[in-house]
Image (cartoon, rainbow, N blue to C red; front, top):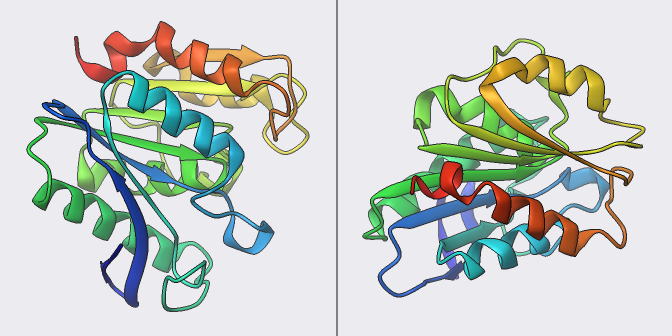
Length: 197
């Protein structure tokens, strides 16, 4: 599917769950590092949310896949995220919005959080070093980190979120190879935060 974005059409994939009260926008990792909505880690998040009864919208940032436009150093991608959120709000009956992101996608989620005001955040290895201008949002958050991540320091990231987030650490690096099921399990542990139940 395609929907309108600020730099042209954006490619997305909507999976609707009947009678779902929660809808989620999923943001993928860095476009210039091979990131797309079909990333394996984001796929693990996606499958876990579907199992929990969440309607999901994955989408490609500008210049990725069939999405029009070109990479914009995170600024345009921030607006892409807002466009995806608005599209989902306009096309879903869900009462609750969840914003999820992995790595670069986690930063995009943090950047729009104060404006979009999702009900909860689900962030996997968010590269908060790219978001030093931001303060931790006062939104219920679940953060999943790799203990051996060379790009996102688990200790520093935990400190950045402080008491605002429920933080889970997995014995993995940034790419969580072989730990996709573990990601799903950790998400399940915090479904009350994510689903508001």
